[in-house]
Length: 174
Image 1: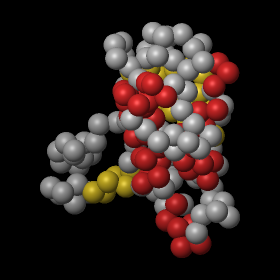
Image 2 (image 1 turned 180 degrees about the horizontal axis):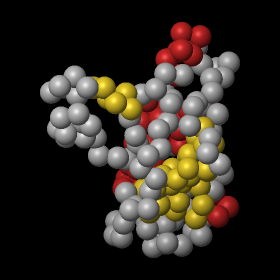
Image 3 (image 1 turned 180 degrees about the vertical axis):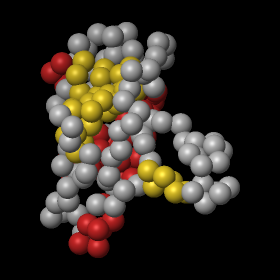
């Protein structure tokens, strides 16, 4: 996590689906970065949106493939993916989940090994629902994501990429 990340950002969204997106993006960065580093950063945009950046120093993505990777069952280099695994569904599903929240997901890369890739997730601080989301989930998506301390029972808002420490009893959550 980059030290200049905005650690006060609170995103009101479907925690399960946004977590799925973040796990997919970080796992991809790990999968395609043999040496170097992977960094995450959060920043507030125009007061009503957040930008989450996942940057790696891996093999990179050829410039002409930057949109192709978001198509179902598409992989840039089948020899690499055969070694690393994958179905070619993670990025298309992730993009769709972010779009369902009123956000967008895209990638940038020079296509040079060692310079890696950067994935950007832009989300509204309060997710909007779309017709695709089932009616029963609409009320859930508009509620804040909270954590509950198993020691003292205190509830507090979830903040992405911030170590979870109870604000009341200061116990650390896993």
